[in-house]
Amino acid sequence: MEAESVDDVLLEADDKMGKAVDFLKREMAGLRTGKASPALVENITVDYYGTPTRLREIANISAPEPRLLVINPYDPTSISAIEKAILAANIGLTPRNDGRLLRIPIPELSEERRRELVKVARKLAEDARVAIRNVRRDANEAIKQLHKDGKVSDDDRDAALEEVQKYTDARIQEVDQLLAQKEKEIMAV
Image 1 (cartoon, rainbow, N blue to C red):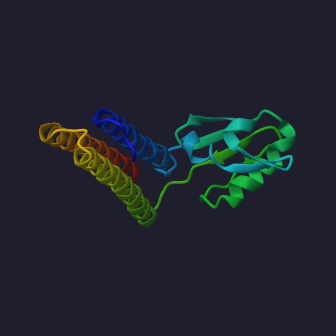
Image 2 (image 1 turned 45 degrees about the horizontal axis):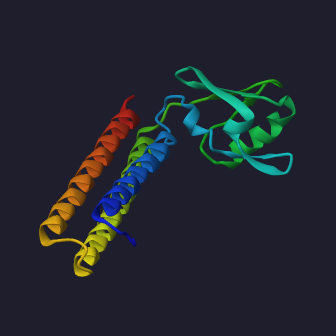
């Protein structure tokens, strides 16, 4: 982190921590909870006329019922490629092809599978916490370097280090809340 001022360091740290939380949100959305969610399949890569393309870019994905996903391709000729990609993604879902749409019933999760998913969610949350702590470390080093270079006074350095810690605490609390919410979702029968 090469910064000119404490404000630059603080802005960059807050931005990077926010991105870590946003990434966690996207990853958590892709975890199966027993309820149908377009996020389960929207990022699956489909071989669309030789080009790897995300499913959400070539089809409309909806959840008309709590246990059913419906995929309506914009190009009906791509339906078999979409079906193959979903099966290849190995997410435990089997699409039913009726020629125009793909219907994906979402089966009930077993207790064992729920526990595995909670472990995955906890690992994702821990990875996010580590990323946030790494940003904190980098920001603290940058602030200390600014102080060493004589660009920041002792009081400003201490205030900035305190501010970085506040950002860190707030983002880690956000991660913990996301994890608790996802665990509750997964374990709900």
